[in-house]
Image (cartoon, rainbow over all chains, first blue to last red; front, side, top):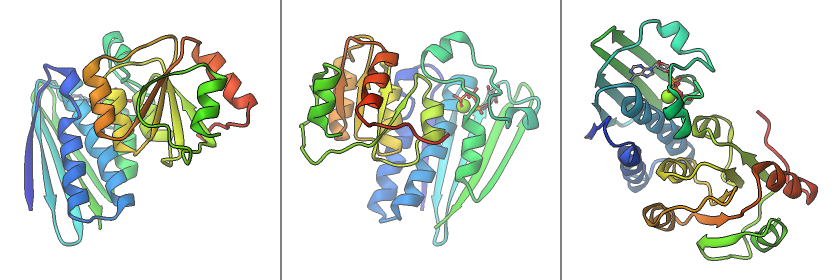
Length: 136
Length: 116
Ligand SMILES: Nc1ncnc2c1ncn2[C@@H]1O[C@H](COP(=O)(O)OP(=O)(O)OP(=O)(O)O)[C@@H](O)[C@H]1O
Ligand SMILES: [Mg+2]
């Protein structure tokens, strides 16, 4: 099964709608609640990253027999140094973003913790593509 | 602590949610940074104390199945935020005291933090 969501970078108040939707879908599919929790955290952090760091993008969810696969893809500044971005506490978030409750530099490391497979590819000034899988 | 005790000890107004006697909390996390909440809160029996008052607080709670959010420093959510919480069966309380004081009072009454 495939589900696709468009993520805007323009209205922060709507960020999280896709994650909320996906969580409901996973519940309806009867997926184990511990798996849903991990998937929800990962997808929400990915959605917030698109909303605050990119110019907009999409999240694609594949629910397969043995795994949930998520691709978060955006157009934007990309990530220059992925190793650095993966460090807990590293963030380029502005003061405004911190005032909205993000920019702790915890998102990407937490996404990795929640995933069984994790990869990021990015080109500076062009795009960021995050791909994760969680076994079910 | 149950919900009524919490409300009494830190002088909360109930913004939304039914006060169910079987809501019991032993652990709390105080933070204005939602990524920290998502990274450190391990179970849904933890209550969240925060001075941040926007949609993302509710979304964060929704993602990790938190049942209770206490807004400190007199923060009051707007109607759309309240509705979002109600849709997700999240109880919202508000108190005019500071995060430090609210946390300290609850600690004194037996509430504990979570291991980070
Ligand atoms: N989609 C993206 N596009 C461009 N840069 C990104 C993207 N996602 C992450 N980054 C970069 O990687 C850094 C670390 O990301 P991470 O999600 O770990 O932390 P954060 O978003 O800054 O804060 P937090 O997730 O704790 O709210 C970001 O500050 C940003 O510089
Ligand atoms: Mg992030």
